[in-house]
Length: 516
Image 1 (cartoon, rainbow, N blue to C red):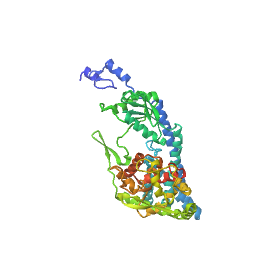
Image 2: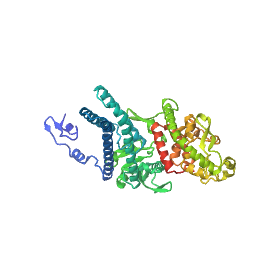
Image 3: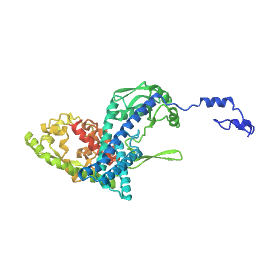
Image 4: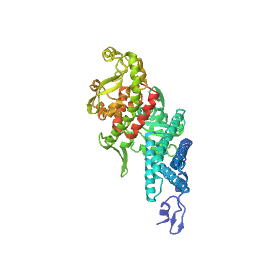
């Protein structure tokens, strides 16, 4: 190697020749002097600061709950039985073992990851999985070392602790949502892509104010127009996609959503990620796979080629047997209070107009099979005969018939509908296997005739007493939106999503919206 060759052998160390160190060319050292790693800008630091603060709050809450619940079985045992020195030592040992194992599993399952905090079902699912895994490990340890106390932990600490953790996460999520309404703890977002794609992403991110995205503006493939109007609100177009990183710095955006990339620039995403180093916390790619839930999507890189795998939905098998078991369990529990309130509701209906208590109607269930739905009667007995005269006043969309002030509804019926109490007898349909607790809205035979090939997919599973349509606005939804929610549920449902919908339904009954 000659002295000249040595000068180009590497950058960052003194070049070496057989005669010793030699001076590198001036140009090489000038380039090294200008190569500086990206520095974190204030907008990104603010984002990381609130993420760390929120994570610490969750960790503190989890620790308190886990510690108290871990000690609860032993404390109850000491209170109910004579105190022995060995028992006190065993309680301390059980608590000292359960607490760290449980907390380590919560951390190992990334239950406080910034990617899922405040997301709802995903966060709760991870907490449940971490708790189950922790107690599985504890059970093994207790059996191996022949320690006492595992039964009490499984019977008392596991259910109470899981409920406590979920309630804690739910409470913090509600707090986070309230903060986001004032612009706190929210992701400052810039949307980039073709105008139509940008509009779709903005509409999706702002439809529900709980998602935590504050849209600062858009960068499109064309420099005009100066603004995009989405659902009556104007969003500033800050420039073209080539200048996204520059405008992110100017606006203090900590997140960039790429709705679509330029057709003639395959390296756009990689180059943009480099330009955003130190500026944004994340670069989000909007997928054209609309209404495909996360559990059905997996990313498998093959030789540097990121392949997105989408699992095709199935409509039978073990998971559907689990859904049926949950339906039976919930229906049996629900029919007990329903049986208790039915005499009172029947009396009120009878006093109102003297008609029958229950209303039977033919609906379409899974695979197009007909069944008779059971509800508390909320309309006059002549409602079906009066329908033809009201057709022209229809306020519903698509094949649905809806009137906000339907003259056929009785006084008692209006109250029952407002709080969804008229739906309670349908738990009998659930017990019979004709319906599910959660599912698409059960359609009338007349509605089926207006279905196209896509809408028929809502008949692939059993209809439900409640569903995404009910907790998302009910009668205030358009026909297309109602169908979209039903189809999304049909293809992506899970046990955890069903539990979330049941919980949201209970909230909707207390604070009704779109029920008429």
